[in-house]
Amino acid sequence: MVDALLAIEAQRKIEMELQTQQEEAAALKMKDLKSLSIDDLKKRLTKKGLEASGKKEEMLRALFLVGLQEDAAAKRKAELSSKTLPELKEVLSRFGLETGSKEQMVKTMLSHEAKLAEDLKAFELKVNEEVAKKSEQLQTQTLAALKELCATKGLAVGGGKEERIERLVEDIRAGGELDKVVSVNIRIKRKEELMAMDKATVLKLCESTGVDPLVKDIMVERIISQEAEGDTAIVMTDEPAAKKARVSKK
Image 1 (cartoon, helix red, strand yellow):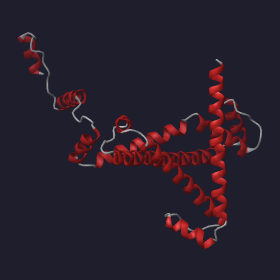
Image 2: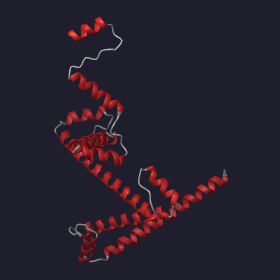
Image 3: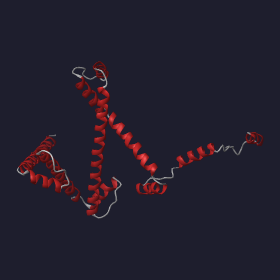
Image 4: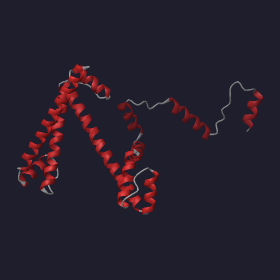
């Protein structure tokens, strides 16, 4: 028990030291950036493909954030590179990614994670758009109606209109309602994109993603629907001849 507590305390100290080091490195990075002139900041932003405009503080923040992202990417690359070949293969297989040489797999995994990060960022932007729409809808409500909505959801009812709207919107966001709305919209849009593709492209996409395009249940349902549309009479083979005749007369 004592050994376990000592181990936990030692790990905690290591984590605190690492956090301190990271904070010191971040402070030093910001200090270096602040020493740059406006022209130097613009050159660095342009070199990194970022917009080189705005106030100095805005440009500093943009460069600082991209620097943190680059540091995180370098750290992640080092973590993946330190893994053995079998370990990397296991990681990539877990995500259904193609394996290969160590260098290729590290690159593939980094690209995959970058794509996930971009997708998450895009998703959050869409959620924020839904938040704005919901706020606009609530703006049309009276103060009394907003108070009643807050009370119904167990939220504080005090304050002005903006405060009540903010509480309601945050409650909706926390409940995941807006996430579901965005997910449904994305699914509908993706379905429209797939329906606009020709059959050969869809089949090729099925092959590349490992999706079986010939699902038996769906094929059976479509056959039955087609037969029903064509007024095809389905008669059991073991029915009496007289009954079959009556069916055919109809």
